[in-house]
Amino acid sequence: MYPSSVSTVEEIEAAIRSLTSAERSKLADLIPTLLPELDGDAEWERIIRDPRPRSALTKLGDEVEAAFRADPEQFPIMSEEEFDKHE
Image (cartoon, rainbow, N blue to C red):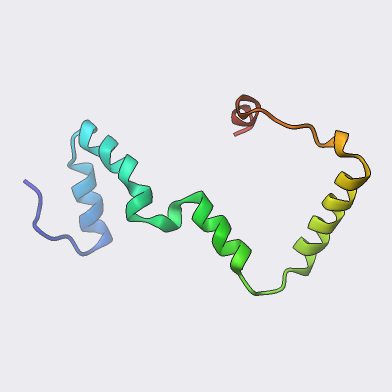
């Protein structure tokens, strides 16, 4: 039913489109393991470990940290449900 080997993005796309709904659902669950670069944690780790200087980002981080130290109450803790509302 499926080609024994796919080697181009177009072939992969065609193969994915030919999957049943159930198989596409399984594939969606597997994508993070197949493409770890899509994992949000892996992406943040890459950003954190990037050695290039980011003076504007560092400055912003320092400003937020100073504001938090001065008045932590202005940074209320959010529940997971509240966070999901903002997506």
